[in-house]
Length: 543
Image (cartoon, helix red, strand yellow):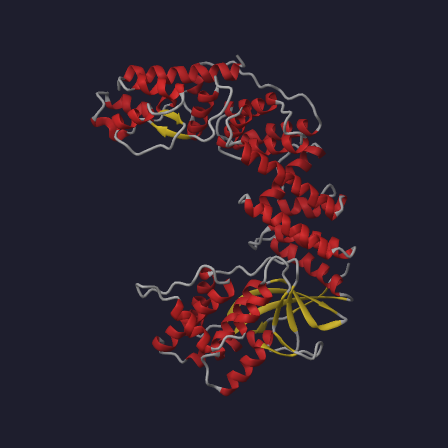
């Protein structure tokens, strides 16, 4: 596919004062710039203006059909392009200069040759939100509208605070109105001079990809989009994946079906507070296991867009969406189950207490490949925990975890990973102390606590109430015996009150431990430390 590409740096006036409309395609993410991004843009522009330096904002990637010169699909750059239009709308309400008024009026929109109706310069077709309605609303605001909304945002203390329920378009227009009001009142420079600078000396680089049809142009633009974003720009992989799936659905006339499927999927992710990129990462480990891949991971975008084993190459878009929804079902099940009092919850909590996600990848793959949640092979989960915790907190566990994942996918026997170790092996536990404390606590229990917290019994500040030598106190503070698993929230209490609080637990193990250490004797604490380590030794040996 030859890329019909043109790129020419243009100032803001030339970017917007055109006989065409920028369209944010359906598959794009909603407008999301907030206060920080808007203020950074505003501040950078004002500083560049004051130093009289030309200013470059960034790239735009545009798809343009040979059959439709009026419509310019924005494949990349919609956030800055939309924000600039909001800024220009606000500035149009300040200037009294007739030339600027005319320029800004034409920038905001005009009569369409295509529809023979007035249209704003940017039209959002994003299917995940009501961006079109919100943007059109703000572009109709008068100065009085913004003044009234500013007044609504002044709280009882006289502070300016936008309302949380308002759209980001309204919020950002109010920010710009507030900042330019301050600029007009306090700057030595004239606001019209700033408008002239913004229109003539601020630049973007539109990279325009052309095709015989809109679909062909978009496909070419996405190639450039992927290339640029693989080289350092910070955009989410999910945007690329969504676009790929959208295009596949579009080719077979099923845009509406895909839009509905993606919305449902996205809502499920939000309900579980999941990042969509993370769901694709879990998906990649399922595919790696199925393909027998145990080497280092590669870039997620490269994995899904360039490899011949990618589901984007091997599966229909509906099959991919079904796979993603199956992963959501697994994650929802894990989330619900870990809050139960059950044997399964015990292993889930231990896997999630580990200091990186590799054991969790194996857990997710196991449930994905074994969807009957009522029939569980606990020995596999135990093996995952034993392997990871024996090696401590380290990213090196990933290579054997990849082998475990491959074996799960191929229904092969998993090594139990029994280890002959001594108590001394557990003297240095690193940053995994909470995990080891939980593992020791659960080692002789069949079921988990529905919820738990982990507390350090003694802190260095307790030297005033403990008749211990300083070196003994310093040694014990970070030892396993100083960590206690609780079936209630931990509290910041004085030592004696803290131990008395532990005794109100409903768990017999916690009650017994708290009575033993209530003596505050060093020997009792050391004995507790040894007993916990002995439990771990028996677990690693498989006894």
